[in-house]
Amino acid sequence: MKEIDWKKVLAQLFAATVNQQTLEEASALMISVSKADLEYHEECLSVFVQALRASETDADFVISCINKSGYWVGSAQEAKDLLQEFRSIYIREFWKATGSTA
Image 1 (tube, helix red, strand yellow):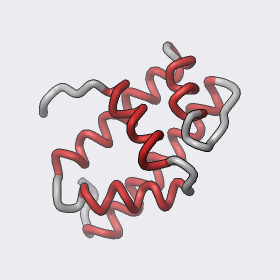
Image 2 (cartoon, helix red, strand yellow):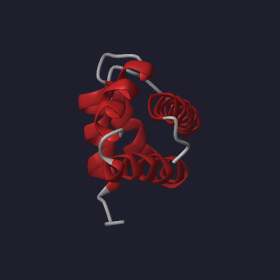
Image 3 (cartoon, one colour):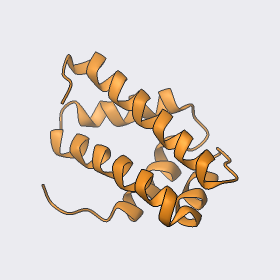
C-alpha cells in the first residue's frame, strides 16, 4: 500500500465528509467510494489508526481537525473516543454494504 499523508487526509475527511453531518452519514459517503475502491478503504482504515495513535502524541492537531468539522472535543481522550466511534461505525457499515470484513 502506498504511503499516505494521514494528516492531510484526516483534515480533509473531517472538513469535507464529517462537516455538519452525523458520523453515520459521513461513513455512508466514504463507503459510497470505498466499496468500489479498496485502496481508498485501506487509506481510510490507515488514517483512523494513525489518527488514534496521534491522539496520544499530537492531540492538538487531531483536536483541531475534529473541531473544524462541526463536532467539538476538548481533550485528547474525547478526540480518541470520537475517532474510535467513527472508525467503528465506518467498519460496521462497510461490512454491511459489502458483506466483507476487509
